[in-house]
Figure 1 (cartoon, helix red, strand yellow):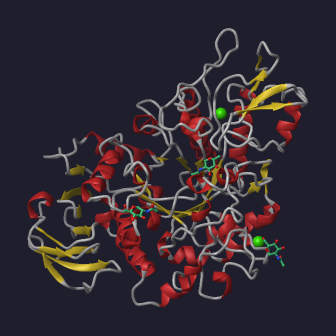
Figure 2 (cartoon, rainbow, N blue to C red):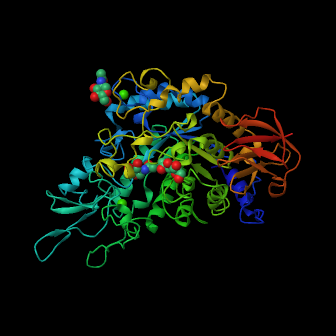
Figure 3 (cartoon, rainbow, N blue to C red):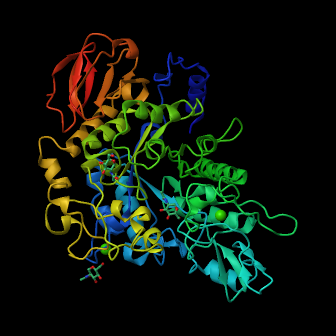
Length: 593
Ligand SMILES: *[C@@H]1O[C@H](CO)[C@@H](O)[C@H](O)[C@H]1NC(C)=O
Ligand SMILES: *[C@@H]1O[C@H](CO)[C@@H](O)[C@H](O)[C@H]1NC(C)=O
Ligand SMILES: CC(=O)N[C@H]1CO[C@H](CO)[C@@H](O)[C@@H]1O
Ligand SMILES: [Ca+2]
Ligand SMILES: [Ca+2]
């Protein structure tokens, strides 16, 4: 970020935001006129295995992505982030990396990658890579060397003798649990020690208290920066560090959470010693410094860090940095995933629930920073399945209308929904490590089905009728080609929102929002000397009428510019701010006259 922009942001931060007059109104002050590229960017997450298959093996790949860059450009995308494409035995579909410096053969080659970057640059599209620092694959050379105690690699991973009880049974070092069910410790016969794996058995945790490991991972970042990536999305950050063992070398057991009776489920324990350790924040600040240094030496646009942390909000906010040090530009805001109903079924969430989610981020974010909005990803059920299909456009509207960065998971722009995957077809280790009775609670496969390009065979994803996960049969109507040709579709609405985002009001304007009864959520974006826009959404299944003049401080008439699939409002329809009728699940965007 240039000095001038930093200064402007600091100036903006020093202005006191207007205080909310009651619990449901929020507002942030924004007076900046210059923005760095990422601050109002539209990010798009690609799960490469499911995006586009170029060679008919039923698996998406890099040439497939390259062949669809024009689609991404048309969609207004600023930067794409790719889920892992590195060499991997695919125990966790690429989140188990065997070689951090090479590409998984079924996805392509380094040449294919360089070509992707080159073609993306031609279109002014940026590419962000997933960086998976917490663990490698057990098939990584580093791990093999560590097992053999080769010089320099002895302490690359988290090794421990464990204990032997009076009956001679071997016991793991602590009660810690892995993310995919069962103990986080695995006995290694060859080395005669346990190793820690906070995720699958095939994902041994790297030892971040070893400076050689820290330096090695920085080499990884530099390597991909040299190949032209614009930054990184950092996977599973809170797990990087574990608590230090005590003087006798013992790791403390974690306390029970009381959330579940299932002792293999990771939520059985409170992860106070294996997540959210203070050292982890410092590591992120070091990575940010690396990006800053890289830019100083090599020039070019700001390189960005996006961090994935499902931690308590006060900890997540610390990823932004503090008074003395900068951290990630975008600690992922998962409030639309975790901030609704505890069971993530938000189909009945009332307007006040939406307000709570929005303000949880805007009211807690350090003032000089930029918000971001994540509605879903490859680990969650599809937005239409969590919030209800009637709200698909409403969720896209929210994501694009709120101030800051939007992050769309591929397929949400066309309204793809979950596909129930049978036990036989399940591929996700989170499902496969359980059993046929309970796997549906854990599986992440339903949101990972192949992207739906057209109503041609195999949804235009592949020429192979056997794809790595089955294709959702709704592809016949839910696909890019059909939706592009329609006069009104999820995709055409998404494109209208993209255009709206380019206005100064949306890029730089203030936000004010409120719930009206259970039904209506209303958000205002405004900027001096520019048009004012309102997003008016009825989030429930009954009609409602509302007067938004007092809470949103608006008056007079507004012209409809965008409406959701359910709405019969036409572009140009005029409404009066003191008397707005919204039918069940209707959502519209209106502009001041
Ligand atoms: C079709 O895809 C399946 C599953 O990925 C694979 O086993 C098979 O070899 C593929 N067929 C061809 C012709 O590549
Ligand atoms: C969510 O809850 C609604 C209403 O309680 C129910 O009809 C729907 O089936 C639930 N959806 C899921 C995916 O559980
Ligand atoms: C959202 C996300 O990227 N989740 C990943 C977190 O890390 C684990 C282990 O690397 C993956 O399995 C998840 O997919
Ligand atoms: Ca392929
Ligand atoms: Ca770790």
